[in-house]
Structures are given as C-alpha cells and as structure tokens.
Length: 184
Image (cartoon, rainbow, N blue to C red; front, side):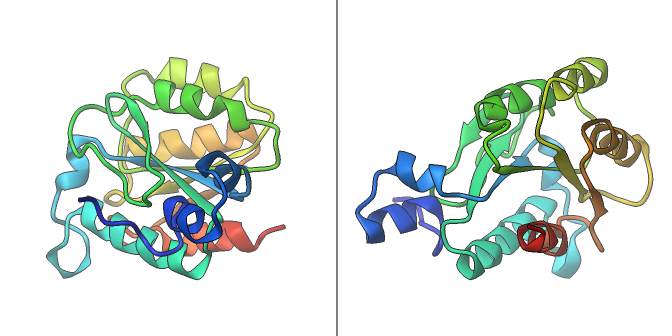
C-alpha cells in the first residue's frame, strides 16, 4: 500500500468527500518533478539523493498548503501523482511530454512549476512546446552548480515569462515553491 502525503490531493479528496477531479481543479500550483535517473545521485544535504530530498520537501509543502499542490512526475513519461510523491526514479528527461501532459491546465489560473536537475532529451522541441503556453512556466533548478541544465531552465522560464529559482543545494525546492504559492 502506498503512503498518502498529508495535504496531498488524495488526502484532501478522502477527507472532503469531493472527487479527485474536483480536488485537482482546486489546486493552485502544478509541480512537474523530474524523476529521471540523475535524480538518484546522493549529493543532497545529509547524504540524501536529489529525489529523496525533493520528496521530503514536497511532503512538507503539501502539509503546509493542503490541497493546493498537484504533483506530476516525469522521466521518460509523465505520471499524475495524487498521493503527493513523485514516481518512476529512472529513465530520461522528457520535458516535451511533461509539458504536453499539463497543457490542459494552461490558461486556467493554475501556476505551473517545472523542477529539474538537468538537460531535457529534446531541448529545441521543449522550447517549442513551452512557447505555446499562455501560463508562465516557473522553474526550479535542483542540480549542481552551473551547467547547461541551469542555463536551459532559465531560458525556458524567460521564454514563457516565468520565474527562475535555483535551489540552495541539490534536491531542495521548498523556497521556490513556497514563494510561488505566496505570489498572487
């Protein structure tokens, strides 16, 4: 049996009696979390992997903001994670399909945040898909210092009018997401 994060969409759905669809429609932010193989690197604080650190942070964020955060993990394919924790720690970084997956929330007032530690499989196509969004795509880079992945995410955010955040250490994302939740 999978754990259900306190404050996740499934948790809110179960306690409110509303459908999961209704609960999703009430979320304020969709967080796309990179769960590619590189997220398994153990360079986050306290010897955690980037994935473990991101999961810990998502658990805290959802607990503090019940029902406001929808989680979607992506690697080679995107997966909706209503229980609150990203899945599929393996594969590549298919941002194209992740963006296509969340396209239905574009223009609805829901914020979109892309969290990644690296380069997309198809950089040019990812930017082409991003250009079709009305909603700004905010990004949080959770990898090591510098590198092409950070530059790419900054470019994606700028292209869509989004904000770009860089974590204090690999795997950390709370400050960026909490800032975005507070921005009206």
